[in-house]
Amino acid sequence: MSTLMQLILNSIIAGGIYALVAIGYTMVYGILKFLNFAHGDLAMVSAYLSFFFFRYLGVPFYISITFSIILLVFLGIIIEKIAYKPLRNASRLSCLITAIGVSIFLQSTVIIFFDARNRVFEKSTAQSLEFMGASITPLQVIIILVSITSMILLHFFIKRAKIGKAMRAVADNMTVASTVGIDVDQVISLVFAVGSGLAGVAGILIAWETNLNPTMGFFIGMKAFTAAVLGGIGSIRGAVVGAYFIGFAENFGVWFIPTGYKNAIAFVVLISILLIRPSGIFGMKREEEIKE
Amino acid sequence: MNYLFHIIILICIFSILSLTMNLVLGVTGLLNLGHIAFFGIGAYTSALLSLQGIPFLPSLLAGSVLAGVIAYLIGLPTLRLKGDYLAIATLGLSETFRSVLTNWVGLARGPQGLPGIPKPSIFSIEFSSLKAYLVLVLIFFFVTFIIMEILLRSPYGRVLEGIREDEVASQAMGKDTFRFKLNVLWFGSFFAGLAGSLYAHYVSFIDPSCISINQTIVILLMVILGGVRSNFGAVLGAVIIFCIPEVLRFWNLPGQVTGALKQIIFSVTLILLMLFREEGILGGRKSKIKRFEETDDVIND
Image 1 (cartoon, chains in turn purple, blue):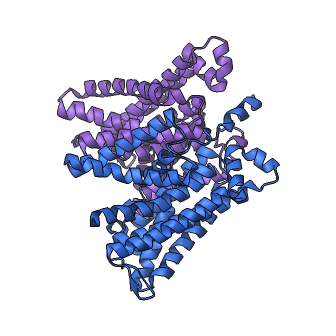
Image 2 (tube, one colour):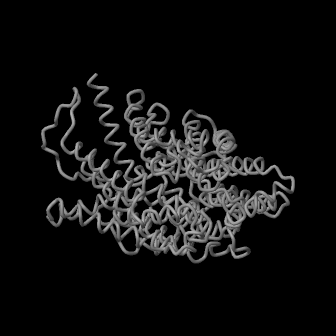
Image 3 (cartoon, one colour):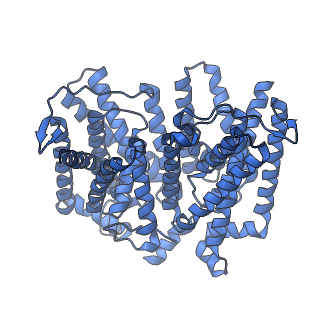
């Protein structure tokens, strides 16, 4: 019983973190129709930024988190302006290759400054709490709360705020949106800002919960991407559901197979969905857009 | 001098990879990010067989054939996916394969890798010296180059270019495009397996890190930098990519910084190429890669 409860808790924690990254993936895809391969690496950069402020400069913890998230929002906007905006009319493959380049660039830059070792943010000394026979640290409670709060805020932002509605309009049809006076460039910048900010939150949560590694971004990115595809790419609700599914699949998967394969579980799920139901659970997209 | 031979051998081996990547990506327009996995299949199969005492040529052939067969089986479901989804699916397969190699210690010693792969010998001729190996590798390189060049200039190659430019139009011309793509995939992977086998027997040690995503980027860059759709371009790309680290050597930086700096140069080059010269250095013949997707959208709207 306690093992089962523990697995469920771990799945919820992992799912929440993946969801934050997956939302950014799915929002960018919804509007620009390309896979922002570098999105997971943004989470990695934010983890290292907060690590740098906190451990090297001795900035108080909450201030260093705030700083790194703000910096990450700007980084997201700058990357979009420099690397993706000139390619707005290019093919999707060119965009994908550029995004892969950005991903490797971010990863190598971090290796130059911090080298490739595993880093640990801070050894948690807090007493873990008991919850229905499973143990959970206060930090993990914070992770669950932060991820769920961010998702709820985002939901209302997109459904209610004027600029949120503009986002949906641009995602629906960019040309028509611009003819009714929506500033498409501004909306795209905002999407990158929100997506990067959420990825930033996720990166810090992961760094805090486990450790930091320059390649972590690739794996977070692939899992988040799988979540986004599983839920139906372009759908935020789908990305969240997909992320929790990946969280559960991973944590329950290692019950049956060796832990070393944990990262491969997401890939297997990804390939299976692409082949069986590429439009995902909540996918509105017609299958022809994905399959030939 | 020996050092120069060493670099030329590596350039030849990786040119075989970039030539076949050019066939798959440049000519046919399939962004296969799992090409390095077939290199790995060739390397591991050939290494494992040689370590069991099987002679070089049968091991090499077994590695290449297995890479081709697996590519065929993988292609059957995945080639039905479109552009970027195919890219991610093949990348996922490649990473899964690496994960299996790392974790299944019983298969090939996991992360410790396979040491002591014997130098090849064909009909009692030993290829143990650098010069001898250079000759062997050059033969394979030229054969691959000539095959690719013939293929690219043949009517078959023109169908492949047609598939890249407009798949629907090629279908309308009565071409079974899926069959063509599948053939390209297994054929290219066969040679990737061959390159892997040559690599394994040359360096005599392989581990799962030789099929990491960074290697995929390197091959991708070789093709795109040298010139998409041009076989000379693919070779030029391999030469340039192998010369960059040699220039960095003069600075005497610590090893890890050099490695990361190399990756930064690669990634920035890749981004700049996509922004300013999509067709690469020698690929100036036609300047559109898959632009037809846009026109499709306009029609659908």
